[in-house]
Length: 341
Image (tube, rainbow, N blue to C red; front, side, top):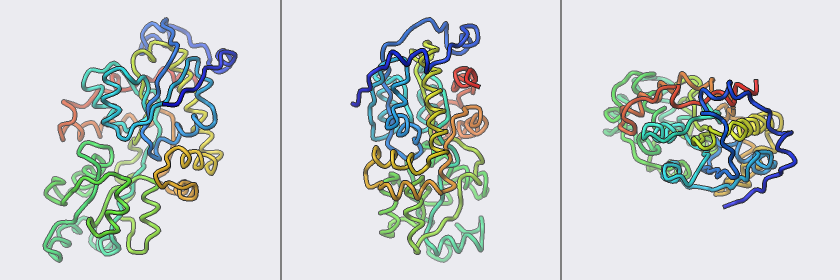
């Protein structure tokens, strides 16, 4: 755990006062004051704002003591969040949906990233896709006597949902399980798995898409921004304790917006921050190169992802991770972001 001390002298300067009437609708009465906040993150590239906020000292501007915890996966954060050990999380939108579906009192304060995946495959498969389009999977099976082998994170994860949408809705070639042979491959292992020949394709985030794309044996089949335009990837999620403290909630969003602006204005510095925190083979050069990818889009505006969040929620429900799609008003808290505009 990393602890960042509160700078009391900056509290008034860093957090703009929000009228209680304007914030009370989504955030309770706004009268409770937090002394401390625990922020959890999953060390993936799409959580760029966290790396900037940590390395540039933006968390110090939050009017509460901020402790940071690193988790290996979204499901691990879900467990910690549900047990009350975590107040704020930067992770995929589908874990946020799972928590909301389970009745956890929490909501999305900001988007982190969107349009953040590429479908990468062998050059042979990419060339076939360019020639045949949606007939690719049928033609591949005819030629090889087996289905295309896809490596992807577990059912219901953000990349899994986008992959399902691509096959079932965008291409319209049938239920995913009947079209491809999918195996569970974590993003960090996708490069090694596809290079070893164990899979033919993967749907992958940056910077791993950049690594695969640098190999002449592999090419891009599709970009998720063309599959499901403006779909969310990761979000800033906060529990009711944070939502009830309007000053802390708005300050977190304010620093998040500042981190998004920093990333746009100083991408190389942001990439260096990401590399220094993520580690695990993500070098500064790789993180910087991935900034040039169309799959690297970092935003804060929660309104920008609501429509596609609803679409994705239907697929998350279909695979059984949630009982039913979570209504927008139950998944998002817009007031802290809107108060800054």
